[in-house]
Structures are given as structure tokens and as C-alpha cells.
Image 1 (cartoon, rainbow, N blue to C red):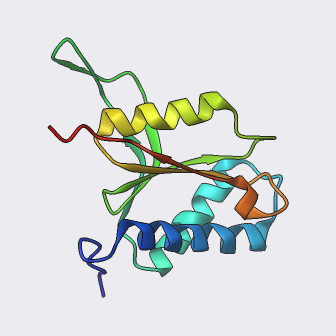
Image 2: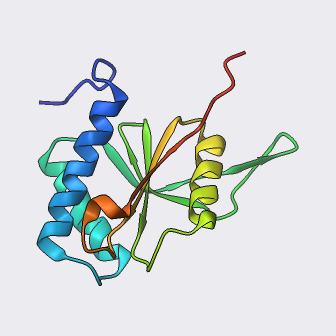
Length: 135
């Protein structure tokens, strides 16, 4: 049964995504490659009946020209939330800037950085909001 996320609040959706990430982290722990966490997290999304895209191409618009610069979004959930997966010592400011730029380029409002290389998953979660201009 497909969930209609237009009805469900985006905050509830992000909470469910975080729950899935916590389940993956509990099962695997820290120390693996990002690709392993991505594979397992996507399997969790299948089990939870989420719609998602992996490694979604993100073109760059430059002077009214769409250019494929090779950017890929790790995971996009329900065409609403970008997930940037990490397995690093700590989230750096550049990781936050990268996700904010992805949000701006894609026109999406919410992104989550999920760093699996932590003792407790809650310490590896960063929420980034794109304050869209509502003109």
C-alpha cells in the first residue's frame, strides 16, 4: 500500500527516515563504507514502502543551460527530502554547504546528512532547510 506523503507532514516523513537510519545503524554499527549503508538503508525503504531514487542525477543550470556536471544525490525520498550519506569522522561545514547547494539546485526544501560513523546515530544527523523564496 503506497503512502500518500502529500497528506503526511514532511516532519513526520523525516522522522520515519531517521527511524530507518537508526535501525540500519543498530544492525551494522559504525566503520563501513557509505555504499554499504546506502544499500541497507534503501532496503529499509523498500520494506517501509517508501518511494525513493538512488544516485539521482543533479544537473547544474548555468546561464540558462542545463549542464550535467556529474553531481549525484545519494537518495531522494518521495521527491521531497534529499539524504546525503556519510561515513566520516565528523560532519564538516563543507558537507552542510554541499547539501544546501543540492537543495537549491533541486528546488527541494529539506535535506538530511546521515553520518553512520558515530557511536549513536542521533549524533550523526544534521537537518538542513532550504529557505525557498516565496515571491
